[in-house]
Image (tube, rainbow over the protein chains, first blue to last red):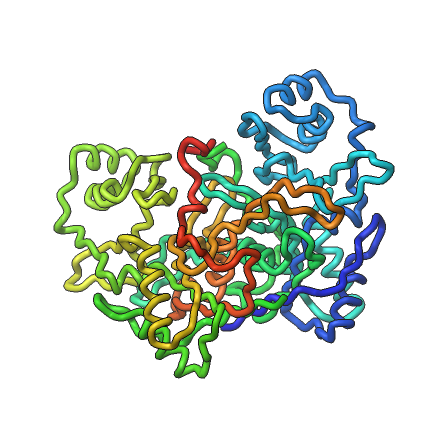
Length: 257
Length: 257
């Protein structure tokens, strides 16, 4: 098996109401990449959030009492902490400079995934960028737009760089999925000696998101869209349209929350 | 940027004392893949452990009192638990069917990474396979063998499928690294608007390990070796030869141990 991760070049700066599906198809065409059946398109969260105008101007935020206290504890801007809390279901861990929460969408994420790099701050007004409102839906809409224009079934993954327990450094992980089985289940499978497999589920969407993250770059690169070609999943494309849900461990099953 | 992950085909079953570097070069040649400068070779832990004869026959293990008690608590074979404890620095979490430890090598890993699938159990004697004794050294030796035979500098990553906090499904992550900066540090970098970057370190070796895991397969596939081509790291190849260490968060910096 061979997998190719190709970054699309010359992606313009994305502004609110931009059509990301159009941007993808235009950039692919310019680069003479024909999008084909089974391609997986991995898109950085940042441009989805920008297209969906998920900006918050910090000046407009009035922090609650809870946010003010927490901000003091972790040494962050109270307005910023207020936005984090509004996005969150619970605070998972906190210490000076660190605020790890469970996002309402189910991800455990530092600062609820709020983003301040590579975004514009017009009129010197500090802004933060929230995660997309419903990343599975955003992925699905892009998948549908590509299908309606090109007649081709692609999978779409929206990824974001996340920290994790135990290990240093961020990893690109999936936050929204369409047209793909996010968690590949090998339950009932057997190894090459016919022994039943114990580890039975692979976070395929996260592995695709991580690989794509390598070619997206983190700093000056303007390559937030990656076409993955050659992926042949064990299971046919997400017939049940479960999106990201199978990757999210429920709180009662989680030993680290 | 374009990254290609190619699995080597027709890798033979690996036995103790097999030379993994030779196996890689032979398989690449048979498949008409010329290994070139900057290639990253990702190798599944399992074949390294097999070549290093890291088998333990459970029948030969005498469980300690601690192992017997813990085995009862988590409902596992006391001999198996004994081996896990011998490999571990501390137990991190436990519940029925689950034993998450800090391996002596520094990884937080279910069952200390012990492996029972896709290994032979001769004479019906149950065996387990330990992680390589020193995965960084194993990676380094393979890198050196390829350099001495072909005169080419490759990077080598040994990967293993690991569970994680908060999310379901395993992910291929790096457990040994040579010739590569495992943690790409963007400290002091700036975004496209000149703003200083806050998230400053990317677990590049883990992203490579995850992408490679996709093409290795989990069940019947016999493709434990993947050549990654096109990776151009931000930083030049690991001049300090730090191996995997920069990826391992120290216990005192970890909020989840």
